[in-house]
Image (cartoon, rainbow, N blue to C red; front, side, top):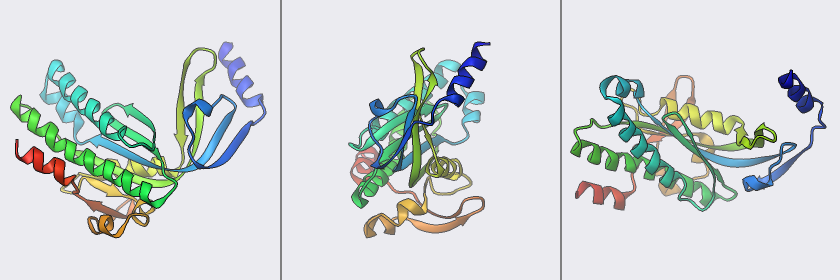
Length: 231
């Protein structure tokens, strides 16, 4: 079978080069035989109680909700100069960032609270169209990741895959944030210890079962927030 041939081809190939880098490179440096180990930051934004939306709204309205949410979350997550990838997985939008100095970490935190502020704008516009407000969970963490290219070689169907604790951690933080009256932003220790003092002061330490010690807050971009509240 063709599948067996392809599997054997992959498994029997020499391991290739897996280079240690300070910051993740552009995706065009990836092939099907190399990869990069490096430090990066990840931000995940996940809609809370999305199953309730499918029960409440018909497909045309659902499409408008998800299109507007995904469109503008992608715009926010993609707005930083150090962004490496922005991906859409169902109703979750996430991004990875090249963060090789401490001030880059503060930039990524700013992306997270801009995303949180954007939810207020979305809910304002939803209200004008008789759509109930949504809530989100935002997870942010920093750590080591393996970046590889994977897919069906020769088909043109492929993608960059990020594997490592930082991706899993940020996803789990987003999954738990914003639930049961919790703050919408959860930050891992790798991010928190690298933030400047002002940004650290915006977050509170708490213990979450299954996550351990994390830092949380309902932080907004003040200028954008003031503009939204004036609408």
